[in-house]
Image (cartoon, rainbow, N blue to C red; front, side):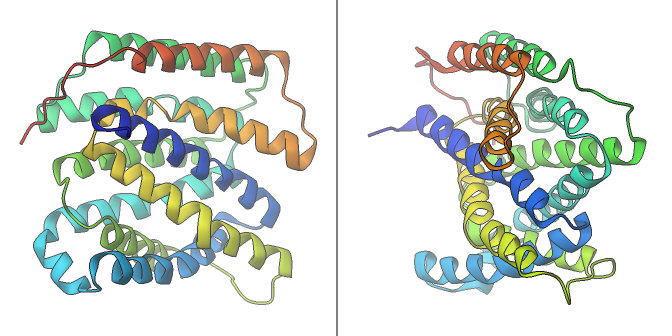
Length: 288
């Protein structure tokens, strides 16, 4: 059985693979980011509440009272991250978003050190550098003129995500389902004023259901559980997997064959992940 740090890596990898389908569903729906984020959250909110009832016994109020500050924080950060990320995909070049996402491990490491006193070891920093280089290779031939609003939204999404991983790490035992339910509620409150969810095509609703019913909730559950077992900087180290997987979905679903640089960059990212994970057995010190 996979335990300890390795379990955190496994959850992070699985979570990133599932969340990587976000760009596929957003593109399939072909609507504005506000509406898509609203629809996905409307679908995912009851899913999280049902899971909380089945897995934890359904005492949502009691679960929140056990860690109100932590759950409120992760809920707000998760909601902001999701809204900004989905909207960024519709407002700027995907390549620009990918480059900004590559900064996630660095932001997570800095936030973890400054606010939570968790050190990032030299091996992880080297692995972060390798994976960032791989992402740069992937997008080096496709970065267009930057869209300032979209790029800032992507940066906000990544900063919120990276900080959130540290908060989940700090409050390791709080309910993941309640935290994600709050995140969905925050997303609904933010987007309801700008969304236009009625009178859309069946394809839009099917895309929102696919994203909100299965892939997004399970992916985020894996990601929020990963910091229980591994430092936030190591969890964020797996964010470039989303880059590679998103390219694969585009290839499979939309016949967009990846360039040679995508394959080369993917190999570099894979090597970085191997360097940062394989053969490491040292214990994890968790700051309280």
